[in-house]
Length: 147
Image 1 (cartoon, rainbow, N blue to C red):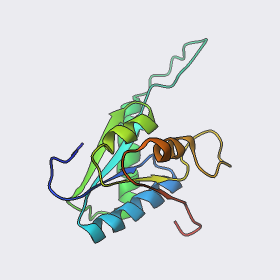
Image 2: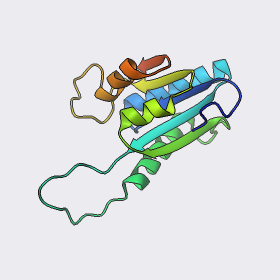
Image 3: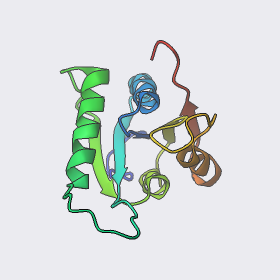
């Protein structure tokens, strides 16, 4: 990630393809425009934990993540992607990947919940972990009916 190598402010936004993360991406894009910031859109992927039987299905999880971030960005910005928007596909736990990406950033933006287990949760486990452990300010964007 940029981690301060580019001049000016830097915003990191977590993207997983969920409606909530698309709302976070839209908010982060607006904030980046207002503050002339570089925007790092980050998606994390990891091999699913499986126990018991091995499944004969071969899935390229990194490719799935690449497609998810590409589709999310296209859905939010269309074909006119800003030059200062950088996408990053990183293997690892989502919360830890976002915290690492946000090291040295001016702001971390996450959705209130993504594709996790408890859909009813007001704040997802990844966003909650980021709020408690980030070394920069964190904005949690709640998906609304319009986003």
